[in-house]
Amino acid sequence: MSSLSRSLRADTVVGAAAGVWRTHDPTGRPAMTTINATDALLDALGESAVDTAAVALDAASHDTWPVSTVWQKLDRHPHRPDVVVRVSTVREIVEVVDIARTSATPLTVRGLGSSVTGQPLPMHGGIVMDLSGLGGEPVLDETDATVTAPAGVMGGDLETWLGERGYTLNHFPQSLYRSTIGGWIATRATGQFSSRYGGIENLVVSYECVLADGSIARLGQRPRAAMGPDLKQLLIGSEGTLGIVTEVTLKVFRIPEARFIEAFTMPSVAAGVDAMREMSQAGLRPFLVRFYDADEARHAVPDREGDAPVLFLGAEGVESVARAEFAELSRIAEARGGSSIGSGPVEAWLGRRFDFSTVERLLAEKGGYAETVEVANMWSRLPAMYAEMKEALRPFADEVLGHFSHVYEQGSSLYLILLGRADDDETALARLEAIWSTAMEIVIAHDGEVSHHHGGGLARQAWVARSLGTGFPVLEKLKSALDPDGILNPGKLGM
Picture 1: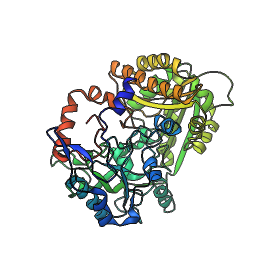
Picture 2: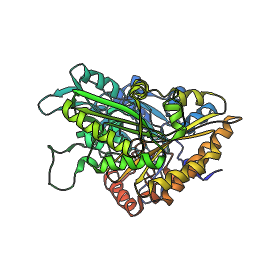
Picture 3: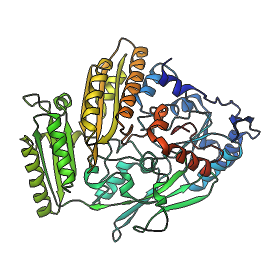
Picture 4: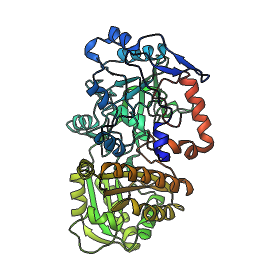
């Protein structure tokens, strides 16, 4: 068994069918609960909200992480809950939390299951609480430029609702039409236009949450504060381990007046990376900066002649300002050897940017596998990390594609897509595990970030402590203070 397999399967707590779960008290001593959690949930919420059918439990033991998809193909469900609960109100969430705490039952929250790293999979069985029914009409405040909506609202639905009123979230993860706004907070999501508008940590104004003791809190600032640390950041990226987000207030923006886009071929990866660094450090804020290496450029611009990396650029906003900004972006690209190939490739990408079918079709094949690994590093370390990852991962896939799509003054993300076909699903699973262990070890060796925006989940569980370093004990103390019984998504974020 590989090290990744061990990290995913070790110490799993198996739930009893009667709804009584074996757990551990805070001292680590084994304990057996005496409250029948399933009966308590039935009494509190009714039969329509509580599901113990095998089909529901199997479905809740998988998300869209390719490893989990292959498990499902092999009819394996290593992280299976004992009961699925569907809630539609904050009161019901509080009741479920109280039952979980009283019965010492693990509780894992799930939205639409679009995670690609195993975040909503219950490592210790127990209760999976489905928040996708926590919906309702959004509230738009045009004076403050905010929108407030329940956490179970799908991002694409909210974006459409705002668009009908002349607004946009400017938050466009590829999973926009598969993810909830509460999930964005829990996973510290980012979107395709983050180089201008920032990730969810920049776009959220405040949120309501239910803590492990059943209390309700609203965390946020109006619009900034100097009263202690910014508590708003506390649950962002916590993956359901510190609290449960129930309502979110987000920034909104007027649909931009003007937009300018263009694609450029670049002479090398080094030239493209240098151009992006110069743009970001000059204070320019392109809404789109997306740089493909030669391998991925063949997919991104399939009808193009030649074999060069390709840089997508875009500026938007007030027409005169956006035009001037785009002129400067273009000047920098051309000064680094870039040559325009027009706006067509960018327009085509904008039309298909939420399409995940290439990966899905490959995973549906016998022996087919695909994986996405997004990491980040400082400009000074990024080129060497990229080069080593590309070379080291080639033996595990037929294609290793790379692009850089979220830039900052100090560094950038790196997104690798791996596509392959094996003789059977067992071999495919072994290759996926090798991809993760190889990629994570290289990133840590280069002092990079093991996740840029997909989060830890199960995929990165074995590398959490090493990634966070001396910050990891701080996270453990936060967990101990906010969830002393360890009921919220236990086993995630290295805890």
